[in-house]
Amino acid sequence: MRGAATQAMSDVVEERQQRRCPPAAAPLRAAARRPAGIVARSSHTALGIARRSRLASGPGGLQQNANLFLREPLESAAASMNGFWYRKKRLYCEQVSVAKAAGTVGTPFYLYSQAALERNFQVFDSSFREIPHLTCYAIKANSNIAILRVFRSLGAGFDIVSGGELFRALKAGADPQKIVFSGVGKAQEEIDLALKHRILLFNVESAAEMKMLEERARSVRKVAQVSLRVNPDVDPRTHPYIATGLRQHKFGVPMEDAAELYRIASRSRHLRIGGIGCHIGSQITRLEPFVDAVKKLKGLVAALSASGIHIRHLDLGGGLGISYNDEDPPPPEAYAKAICEIVKDMECTVLLEPGRVIVGSAAILVTRVLLTKQNGSKNFIVVDAGMNDLLRPSLYGSYHAIQPERVNGRGLWKADVVGPVCESGDFLARDREIQIPKKGDLLAVMNAGAYGMVLASNYNSRPRAAEVIVKERRMKVIRRREGFIDLVRGEAVNPL
Ligand code: LLP
Image 1 (cartoon, rainbow, N blue to C red):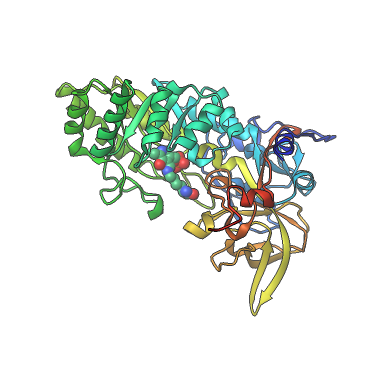
Image 2: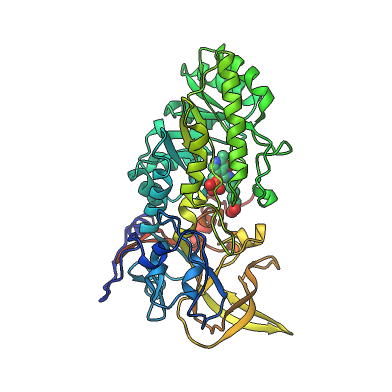
């Protein structure tokens, strides 16, 4: 069984495309001419799935809106900004046809563009080039080790929140001195593992955690570098489930408690004060909350310094949003500029923990239409991916654009795109204008790279989907599809 799995994992399938398009990483002339965030009417609205499109790419080329290509002339190279584009009315990931990939691995599956992953990381990281910094990719957004390895090879550090994520980072070859450990509740075994590997920083979120860290470090005769996660009480104006920097949230310690906690740390031979940090939330589409939080942290660092506590790392967390629908988040360059402006005279290395902005737009979830049905006036497209494959729409009411793999000219339908899971909350899209599909058609759920596969479950005893990465003409299965045997692994057949 294992042998077969390993074989499947390393299956490399060569796509033999005759024609080439510009590599996904190449800057696109059409998009490059327009500054970020410009809203344009498309000349090609035949599909009419949405009439307006932000031809958005940040100046550095980070793709912010994967919806754009349906409203662009088909075969426009602009689509390849995020690695996905149409050629002769068929959807491609870089040079690999989505239909062919589906034929090889079956559906549903997550499909990643390596060029988009690389470019997104590089655009983000290089935006901070004027200050000493380390970009610690937040593994929670997408933890596939092959993807971690892409970032590691580009010099990334990693933000982990569990022993499992530490294990993954190490498997991907991460340098422990580039790993920061976040999270409000770290277990003793997780702390011990991180101490053993001498990670860069423990982001400590409470007095109780500091005490536990000190005890563990003492018992294994190590020194833990501590960075306090403070709660700057800033409203990030995002979905309430993913806002974290307000007083009412479980995260961090109040700013006013920081000095006392650092004093406790400074008295221990097993703790070293390493930094200070915050993370105010996720999918934040405005600069102001970030600016407010960084300014508050800067004030606190100055006050601490005056009382003899010197901070070497300033961890600003993640949180920069992407455009799933019509959001207009600042490009990384603008985000970096705003932050650099505030921190450039501080003697700190800035740590960043982006997740979504790096992986979000670089993947689609490919699913097949099982059937269509009408209940009264309501249309349903039942597909083979459900809330167990992509939870975001059900959990947060999130919007993900859904594109046809093949443009068929059959006109539009308003329908709910739903999965097979036995829950009314199992939907990928509601009341969505979508090309009329027929059984067997493939659909692409866009912007599925962040908090997609990592939130997948086996609910309804559904094996989890495969993950596939594409680089130019080649594709590779980086996680094989689960089989039924995986569903029961670890279970005992006989009760007492
Ligand atoms: N650092 C810390 C401490 C975090 O808690 C998070 C995300 C990040 C960094 C990365 O944030 P990002 O750059 O990805 O926004 N499941 C939700 C998102 C939960 C975010 C949790 N923390 C979703 O699907 O929208």
